[in-house]
View 1 (spheres, rainbow, N blue to C red):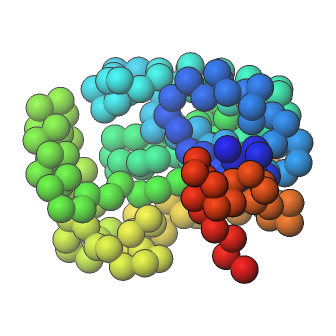
View 2 (view 1 turned 180 degrees about the vertical axis):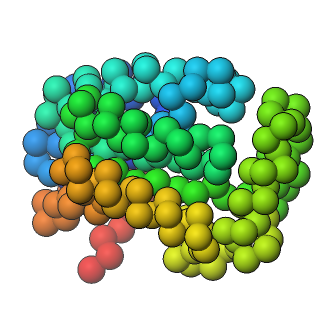
View 3 (view 1 turned 135 degrees about the vertical axis):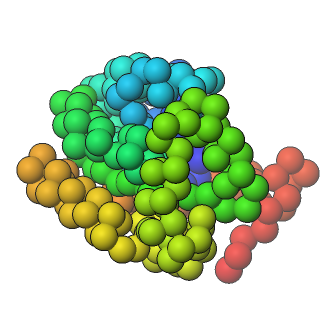
Length: 210
């Protein structure tokens, strides 16, 4: 559907199943209509298994980046979520390995704990990393104005304070060192058009906007 309309898209995934659609994505990427970001949280397989038990292993995600890049698809890495005192130490190495796999864009997201996620995450910490739980949450709250979470735009993805500033500085230095960009991949919007058979038909009832 996206291809028929030349509709640009960007996808963020933890799954290697995206490889199944390389034959569909690559032709769109050639027209600057597609980019793929792979989210990688940690290089520690034990932490990965406990944090994301149903997602692809870290090394498998780097392989996905490599296959996408070799197919000519613009790729990036999302270091997310960055968990203080638990996974933040992996940021630079994740970016280096992603760059080696062909990624030329990068981003990161500081741990977000809105609503009931805070209680769930703290239970998870106590179960798997009880000796680090207090330290992790202390840094989270220092970076969220004393709260578990702040939803303000511009802060919810990055945090604030000393730790958040240091994290941002580390990310910027890594981007500079590797020649990666922290900006989103620019996609082409000029080619978009609604196929004639989509308009006002039984199967595709969407009307033209103008």
